[in-house]
Amino acid sequence: MSDSLTVSPTSDPRRVRAADGSVLTVPAGWALLPPGDAGLTRRVKAAGPSWTVVEKKGRKIFSRGVWAPEAHITAAQAALEAERATPAYARRREADVRRREREQAEYEVDFANAVLRFLAFAPSFMPQAKLLAVAVSAHATPVGSGTVARTERIPIERRAEAAVIAWMRHQTTAYDNLSIARVKGARREVRRELAEVSRAVLDLHRREGGHPVAACPLCKALARLGPGQSS
Image 1 (cartoon, rainbow, N blue to C red):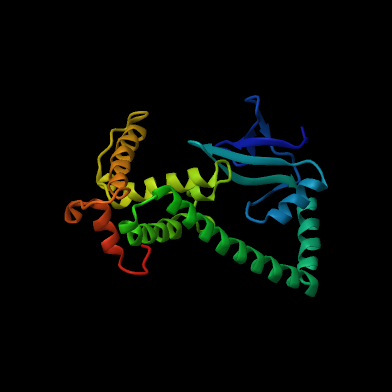
Image 2: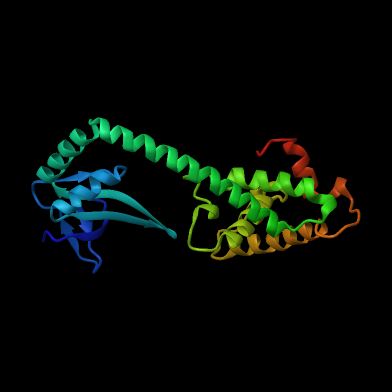
C-alpha cells in the first residue's frame, strides 16, 4: 500500500496507523523526512506517494514527518539545495524577511489598537489602558507564540478580548499557583470564574471615579511593569 495517506505513529517506528485503524508497515526503500522544511516537504509529496505522520495530543496536532521513497527525498534535497544556492533565491529570502517584519510590525499596532477598543477605559485611566495594550500585544503577538492572537479563525476584536483576559489571568490572579483537580472541565471552569473576576476589574476602569488603587490587582500589575515595559 503506497498511496498518499495521513497516518499516526505507533510504538514501532516503521509501523503506522491508518485512518481506518489498520496498522501499516512502511514500504522497503522508504525513509522518514523530518518536519521543519515546508518547501522540501512539498517537493517530496509532489514527487509521488507519501505517508504524512501526524500525532494528536489534546486539541493540538503535531507533525512527525513524512515517509516517502528515499530516492524522492534525496532528489528533492539536491534540487532544493541547488536552488537555494543561487543569488536570486537569496534576494527573494531577504525580501520575504523584510515583508514579514513589516507585516508583523503592522499587526502589533493593529492588535494593540484592538485591545484599546476592547478596554474602552475612561479618559482618566487612558495611561493604564495604553500600558496594558502594549503589555498584552507584546506577549500575544510574537510569531510562534501559540497564543490566540496568532489565529485567524476569529475576528481581531475577539482575539484582543481573549488575549486581555489571558494576560490578566496570569498577572492579576492566583491562577498560576492554584491546585486544580485533574477532572475533565475543572480547569475550564476555573478559567471561566477568573475571567468573570477580570471583567469586573476592567469595568472599574471604564467609568470615571476613584477606586482603591492599592487594592486593585490590575493597577498593581501595571505598576510592576513600569513605564515602557511589557513583561
